[in-house]
Image (tube, rainbow, N blue to C red; front, side, top):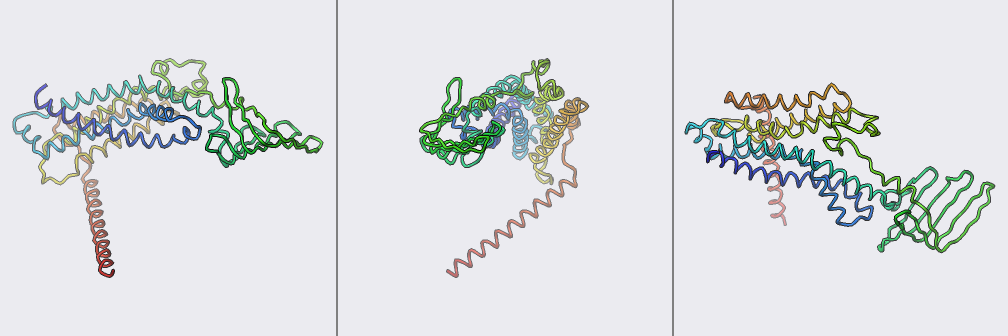
Amino acid sequence: MKVVERYILHRTLLFFLGALLWTLVIVWTTQVLARINLVTDSGQSAFTFFEVATLILPSITPIVVPFALIIAVAQTLSVMNADSELAVISAAGGSRWIIVRPILVLALLASAFSFVVDNGIDPYARERGRQLIATARADLLSLIIQEGTFRKVDDGLFVQVAERLPDGRLGGIFVADSRQPGTDLVYYAKTGAVVQDSEKSMLVMSDGAVHRKAPGGDLSVIRFTSYAFDLSAFSSATGSITMYPKDRTLPYLMKPNPNDKIYQNSPQLFRAELHRRLTEWLYSLVFALIALAVASDARSHREGRINPLVTSIAIALFVRWLGFFVSNQAQTNPLFSPLAYFVPAIAALVAIGFIKSNKTMELPLAWTERISSTARQSREKLSALWLRLTRRANVSGESA
């Protein structure tokens, strides 16, 4: 690899790592916040929370990597063009492939990384994550006993907890049990706690009473110091693990278990997931080609055009949206399965065509003018608003 190519590869790699880190942090944070209630409400430890949060990373990495790469490539080439480095390379007789080769090397490495994560790490991370979630759901505090709300545990069985005490116990427990025909049982206790062992989950209530209404209408009240209510049947049901196609490994998707209930009901889900796995990694290479087609040529600063980074991301978003749309449709319609390969293939061929012909891939002129006009109007409105606010502040200061 030539010195110029190593230079381009080094700069692009630094941009890529920085963009990947910050993009992952932003996406990861949004995903973690969506799951934080499940862990905290079930009383799990901080270690469990961080483990669940870490297991999210493999599922979002293959989606984030292509966008981090296109940001890195477009930004690197834009900076090199602004510093006249692309013009110097062109004036020295260097071909466009001097710029293309190091970018393609990085793109192939990013694609291989995405493939390994998506097919070698993510399925096992998802399985472990479902185990942790199932464990959290098996805790009755999270699903059955929620503070201040009535929860339907089973047909004819309702549970309500007034508050959770600082020491982990429960206060103001109310249980209504009418599962036995003709007999209504109402339990009330001042305090209680959920006690679990290897076999049973018990709701142990203290200092309360049982109101029993017999089939004949007789009502009896029995006070108790301690009473244990068996909830093990419900906790075992909530602790079960269901594995979906996204949780399966690549070999399993190629040859699913015929006894798999989900596969028996929806075999197309497995086929769609298999096609998604085999095409997801291609988008890093496709996005790199798009960035090269947009920003790899030397352009004069006097030429009016949208920033190559904006153009590259706009085109990439459209291509990725098509990929997501086709993958979703393939879950119900097998005719969309081949399109999962056509979308990245056609996008790559179009980008290669622009690169080979030394042309620049740009948004239509009408779009460019519309975006530029909108941006200019927005700047003018913001400037006017800022000017008005500044004047009002000055007038208020003089009045004071």
